[in-house]
Amino acid sequence: MINLIKESNRDVFNFYDLKNADALRDEFVDMLINFDKRPNEYQTDVYLYVNEDGTGELYEFQNVGGNSWLNDDHYTLYSDKPHYEDVLDWYQDEYEIAEALGKTEDELKEEALVALDLQDDYWIDEIGYKEVKEYVKTNEEYMDILYDVYDDALYDMWSDYAEIADNIIDHFNQMERESY
Image 1 (cartoon, one colour):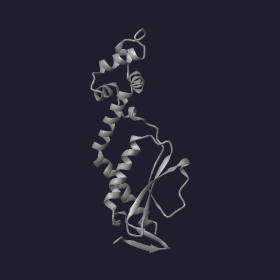
Image 2 (cartoon, helix red, strand yellow; image 1 turned 120 degrees about the vertical axis):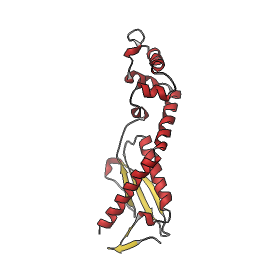
Image 3 (cartoon, helix red, strand yellow; image 1 turned 45 degrees about the vertical axis):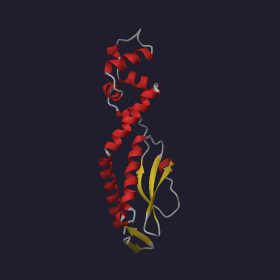
């Protein structure tokens, strides 16, 4: 049974009283991971809809400008702000990129030196993160590998994302209680 408190013609509830709360929580964790996996040009709101049967549904709403909303009965569980990082921003330096690709740092730098046609102007030890990043962006196979490694790493951090989701849900529940 869902725990509803009726005040001012509005229902207040606890997220965890939803019949499918565990499945929704897992779906929300996956959403948080996906927000980190892809850049969002616009704010993305996560709406929670409560059905009459005591279940809930999550819906992503692209909130262009950050001040729009759907005019219906929903709760805003979370807002993911715009961010423009790409997968390469996750790798700290050329060594990490080379390691993810199964290469030595020097092998990758040498490839970048040749592919970017810099061998006449630079030595291998002058090739840095900027040049390596520029080079791998042009190599679809390498980018696929880097995305796969990144995706695996994010899913390896599933428990960390689950903790973040729990904190957001707990904050949401607290805000619902305090709003009355």
